[in-house]
Image (cartoon, rainbow, N blue to C red):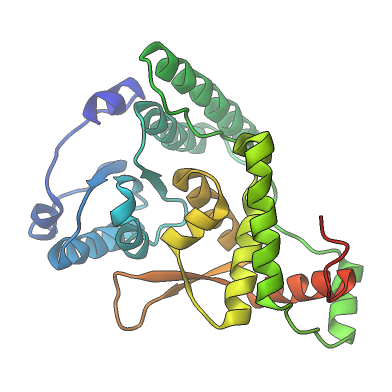
Length: 286
């Protein structure tokens, strides 16, 4: 990881275990903290929670490489606005994440406003292309996850919002109907491949709508699986949808190492009205 950081333009300054970091609280943090997490015990989680607090205070970026089994623990402990959590990443994945962090910090120093967003978008896309080339040259079997240009957050039309205020919200659809729709969407992959339907936002909304109707909570690992895309890509979409107000992150009151993702009230109302528009039997669904 240190060699990848140097390629991206960073200068590695030190390395330590999470527990070492817990017992050295006064050690200064760098611009970016790289984490590699395979298995987290209670002491590791406590150290990661403390490290997350310090990164919040200093504005330090974080890139965490995790194995699938550690995803729930790491996601619950890292509560950053824009964390780079990579699940079983390739070298190209790490370089893309490092490039995004470097581009963000560089653009913040030299520009402000819309111009900096354009620079960040261009640099991110260039880093993604270079990482893909690197994976091909090194014979990597797993492709680098697809990056897309940032888009504006979710915004409902004023007229639509006024209609929502005037009329009561219809009930959520039968969760069995939603599960059937999800199964039908997964069936498409048999004939067209999963890459053609790579946008996971709708699958995420469907899964959380069914969970809300069933009065169950969904862990981040389960939601990544339900999204139908690589976990790293799913995490990026989940973060964007939380920022847009469509999803909510809820901590587990009995276990701080666990966090759940829920449908926001705004999104639940939109989903309920969507299904009501289509009809209870869902005949208009494709």
